[in-house]
Amino acid sequence: MLAKEDLASFKLGELLAQYNYARDFFISIGINDIDSNRSLKDFAGDIKQELLEDAGLNGEQLIANFLAFINKMETLKRSSRNIVESITIIGGNDKFGQEENIKLELKVGEVISIVGPTGSGKSRLLADIECLAQRDTPTNRQILLNGEIPDMNRRFSIENKLVAQLSQNMNFVMDLSVKDFIKLHAESRMIDHVERIVQEIVKCANELAGEKFTQDTPLTQLSGGQSRALMIADTALLSLSPIVLIDEIENAGIDRKKAIELLLKEEKLVLISTHDPVLALMGDKRLVIKNGGIHKVIVLSEQEKQYIDVLEKIDKKMLQIRSHLRNGGVIDESITSG
Image (cartoon, rainbow, N blue to C red; front, side):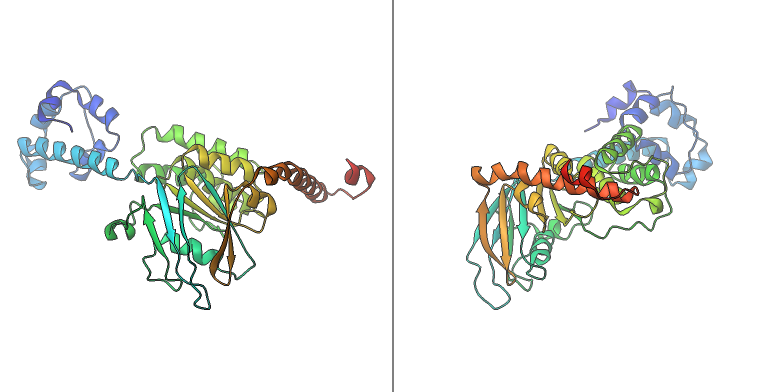
């Protein structure tokens, strides 16, 4: 916590550099010109009396309010760092009322793939995790955080969401550039070095996307794959949510393996609903959904790992043929045998 005596030893410029949101305090009371070379005490002493009166303050109160503002914002920043080490799924029932009979702990750093026929209940499981169900959803499941029932305030908190969900339909309607969008998000997170994080996210997104874009590209001009790549990079590098739910990314035109590696690097628990065999085998565990319930939990075996390389080669070949056709090519022996 910043103490009152600290204020005397720091120039305003140093405080503004250390607390990037501090300037907002002065702007909120109508002060836009700040002499960075002066101490807060000296600066407060020179503010016009009528300006202070309009804000309902005197010089001493302005300093006290500034101190309270900084300390409050720092407390908010610390509380927004969600510390989640695991979630536990306690089974409910399937569509026919049959008991799931399961208690499954999933830890941060793991990748969990969720497989099953269309309509089997994969998205319902993701929804139960996202809302931290407490036997109050159609499946009657219960979700624990770190082995405990989550606090109700935390469950419904908008500011400190524990779960970031990336859906298959991702269309931007905001009239912003990529840069302005990331800046808006970074500033709402009170992130330092906004310009640097913009560059990092754009660079990272371009490594995932098949087609490159710049930070000046309007959001509305991004393709589906570019939009998905941007949101994955944004989630990995900027979102504080420790749990990431991905609802099918196989047709998004992005490097799926790099995307998963990026999210794991940022210490997230990643759950992927998928029909893609390569993605399904990237999971440490595979949940098989049937009739709305968790039918089976399969731990990836050493034998299955041997098949990942084979499937990836097939997948790369299909991507190569897709790109070839998009660029006006024709299918001949050189393509099918290369």
